[in-house]
Amino acid sequence: MFILQDFLLCNVHWLLPDDKLTLFCKEGVVQDFFSSSELNRKPGIQVSRCTLVGDPGELWENSRFTDCSLVVAGKEFWAPKAILAAHSPVFRAVVEHDMEESRRNHVEIHDLEPQVFKAMMDSFTPVRHQTSTAWQDAVLAAADKYSLEHLKVMCEDALFRDPSVENAGHTVFLADLHSTGQLKA
Image (cartoon, rainbow, N blue to C red):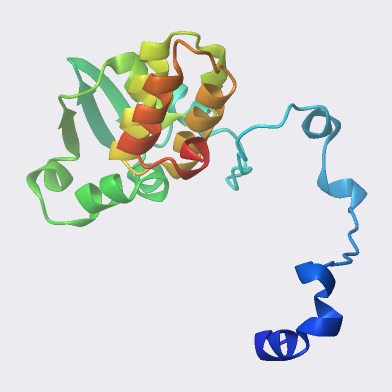
């Protein structure tokens, strides 16, 4: 199943005829792994499934089981600290360390718009349905800043699906600025 590089290079005359390596691969697909919507999906950025059960978005909408207040541009959001910590290493650091915010259970965020914050907190938000480039840019920047990798990949996918001559330069700029590996490739 494996060939050592030294063995391959020592037997070049019969393993690499005309300096070509031919590989025969066997592949299989497990039917239950893909849903029909995934099979019909156009090729794009690989977005992994979220592993959380249920809909965390419901927690934001109903303010259920919340123990932390987040104020974004004057608008207050209530959130469970456990969900914040699970979603973002940045928020985890805020709620874990003995900081003023953690003691008061009150965090002020000055650099986001409330709509962007809401999208950022609900990583199940269908980012691709937002057509505004500015919206996608803002959500991608927030996802990058707060290390929300799943949302970041969703933003990559949304940007990948809308290529044009007009936005190519800007898309490459965003991919580089926010270290989005798949989009940059």
